[in-house]
Image (cartoon, rainbow, N blue to C red):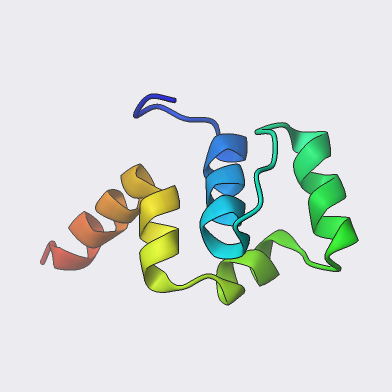
Length: 71
């Protein structure tokens, strides 16, 4: 997995970091995992800690920090 990831790769990484479970970076696999755990994607992000979100979504995190720091 390189710097340019699909959103599925980011979500799979977040699941791994938050729940210590490996999920294929595939839409249907992620959807199935979320259903089994009675979660929505937003619930997953809410459950995760700040460090996990930053590690799973590094490019997005950098962009948001840049936007926040610009006057």
